[in-house]
Length: 113
Length: 112
Image (tube, rainbow over all chains, first blue to last red; front, side, top):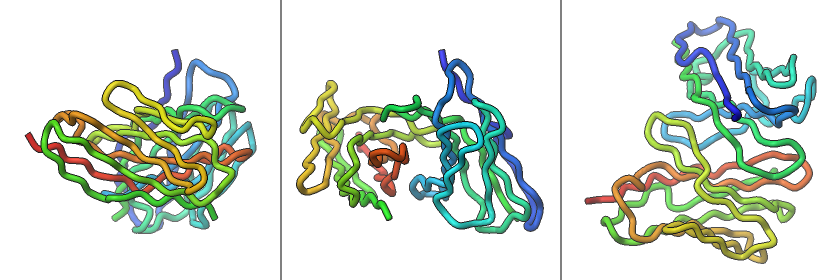
């Protein structure tokens, strides 16, 4: 069966520090991968998605970036965090080539102080 | 760009009553419409979905209807129970891009 992992689960970082959040998927090949941010009491904002290794689509201009160095690994990064980067970050995957259910990871709660 | 509007933002119903959440999408090329339930502190999970070639789909107490002409779709929950209390998100998938655009969510409270 497929599983999706995210780490860390929680993170407190000072403004201006770098960020690296990791997401890995097991049990499937060539998944579509997604990063979302959920602000407190708000909806799911699509940040990045990837349909293959090295293929990244960015949805929102910001100081975040994403990379997909391996088929089932998706990384969200920042060189300098802003206060507004605080939120709940969710990684998700879906089967390639078809519109289908997205499976979400457990999320990372990021607090920027 | 693509947009999905969701209403209401909060909804309180008495246990046993029905709840209806409505979403409107902007991209006429969208052809897949899932609904997710997110309980407090947990990840969103799919509860029902519908594709553009179908007008209605039902799964026990939940149903989704789609009106492609008007570009809106709705979630219907009948005989609500306290465990239905959660935040519900609708989404629209854009044809050819595999993007899922989510609505802003509806916080449903079922009062016992």
